[in-house]
Length: 386
Image (cartoon, rainbow, N blue to C red; front, side, top):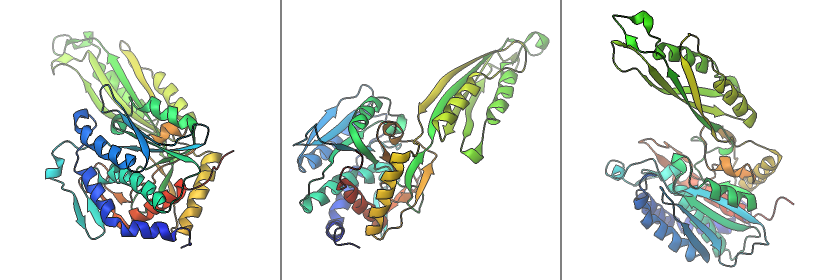
């Protein structure tokens, strides 16, 4: 451990109880994405925290969501470089989940709904700046914090603001949870596409005149097989038919059917290729009509030269903390998929733990506090790119 990091480590260690107190408050304010009325208390709490750290806070109202919180230093200078820190305050858990999954601390494990994905990352944002204030240091690259309330449902309302801030940022850090129990940093993420395949056939009585009908279900069954043949797991491409529906009743040749398809792609080139193949699917029986809709809605977070440089710096800072950081690619998407198009992005800098969206959701406290120290060091890095 270097002399530069020892004061940060000491501050975090001495304020562990305060960190846990803030984390408990965040977890115990249940904030499902589709209930914007539940966010007022968490916005008030975070606004107070950032204002106490000499940040100005703006809450942008949402239409169907709780909107976003944008936090900038009170002495913000638009002529100086910025670094964007992204996170989300929404979870996948319904109100009342705490009754079954209460916030709990047992030895090195902290459990509760949303604790891993990603209320801990939000607490780390606050304490990363607190540690810097304790050291009486001013980051040479101004930190801008953007916290949204709709990441778990696609960030449709916050995407434009994420892109707006990323275009201005020299670099972007995403405090989403790390990857796996090993706590790998996410330097790549797959892109995500959603498509819908609709089939129109011709109805007829299944007993009296089956030969006069054209089954939309039979037509869809062929299309489903074509879709599964697009899978290329060796190259990270997955195509999953998640739901199918069709028909009216058992004695009618089905007139309509539909499939909803999830696509995961590691590169934009793969996304373009798979999208083209889906839109060029052809029915294998006469008399059915096929309609395709959908698109790649989150581009992949690809590792470019600037990303590699940012990762090298992250690894170097990890060694100062006696951490041997590893990197990995996540099959899930985040807001880092958007920011990386305009600003080199490092993702998965948040909690070390497991169980995202699962009943065993938890973090490993000491390993997560190590990442908090890493985050504070990253905030203090000088400009990286000319």
